[in-house]
Each structure stands twice: as C-alpha cells, then as structure tokens.
Image (cartoon, rainbow, N blue to C red; front, side):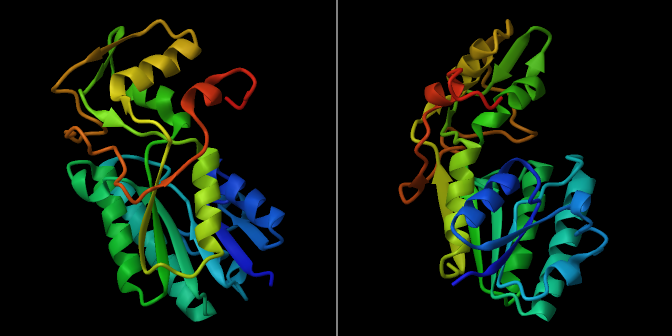
Length: 253
C-alpha cells in the first residue's frame, strides 16, 4: 500500500536521496523545502503539503550554525511542523539527528538538536529518531572548521563515519516501518582515528594541509571523549566503506 510521505529538507543532500529511495519503493514521496514553497520556520505551505500525509520525515537543517539562530530554527520549525502534523492526522514523525547528541551539549548546534528531540518526544505523535554518525561528505567541512594556519588540528578520538547514501537508506527504511517511539543509531562499517579519517579524505582531494592530533582541539565547540562520535553496539551498519566512497569510480563529490 502506497503512503504519502512528506520529506522536509527533501531537496538537500540526504533528503533528495530519501525521496528517491521511497519513490523507488512505490511510495508517494513529496520533497518539501523553502525552494518548493514550504518553509517550516514561517509555516508557509505546511498545511497544504501535509494534507493526507501518513508520515513526515524531517531531515532539514538550520541555514545558520550560530548558537542562537540554530536553537531558534530547530525549536520553531519543529514546533510548527508538529502542530501542523497533529492537525493533519500524521501518524509517524521521523527525524534525523546525531550520534552522541546528549554527550555533546557544549555544542550550540547539538543543544538545539536535543531541544528538537525533546519536542518530538513530547508531541504525542508516534515518532522515530535516527541518530547518524558524521557523514563522509563532511570531511572537508570538518577539516576547514579545524584548520589553524596550514594545520588541521583534531582531538585524539575515534569516529565511525557513514556515507550519506547509507543514511538515506536507513531513514527511508524507518519511514515505512512502525514508529519506534524511540531512537535507532546508524553508522559506517569502519572505525577510524579522527585524524586518520580526515587525512585520508584530504589526501584523496590532493589537499596539502597537514593533519595533527591535538588533545585540546574541539569539535564544533565541544570537547570530545574517545568514543563520543562512535555508535553503540546496537547500531545499524551502512554498507559503503570510506575507501570505496573515495575512489574515482564512485564520482559523487
């Protein structure tokens, strides 16, 4: 049976892949984003797009990562979304969040994600929260954020990154399933030292920056412990390995 599934952030990196996967399974997947006339922050277009929707998948992201702006975005857009879903009779709210959110509360971004999760849990709408580890796609962004002169400084911790493709597969699977009323983790098939992951990513782009380990380095404002960015034993594991993703054959960068 085909369901109408609205994907908020449906034109972005993860969202566009989720829409594609759901359509391939015969679902009526609708991409909703500011560029399709749906703005969760102002509420514009929400009531219309949610008509007859069974499931809402929220993979949207804040346009600004500044602490106050990001908190405002997740609180307001999630609030608007849940209120409109309740009116429309949506039966399952799926949200994408981050592995380690509760452990990373020094980060303004992750404080906002935790606030978002709390709103979802208290909404009364059946829900599933997918916690993903960092995406392969963001290796360069992480390096840029951690660059000091010609060096990239990273803490001595582990990371278990995942391909956006595998995140989308997991999210699409959860979206057509029974609401978990809880959380599921997804992570990549390999665990790396953080510096090694970034070093490999930069090397593949012929980026000359030197990657160094610095115990005082922070990650988007947060101090990490060794396993903060690693999934728990129950995580669903993606199929795509980093070296395969980096190889020119999979040309998607």
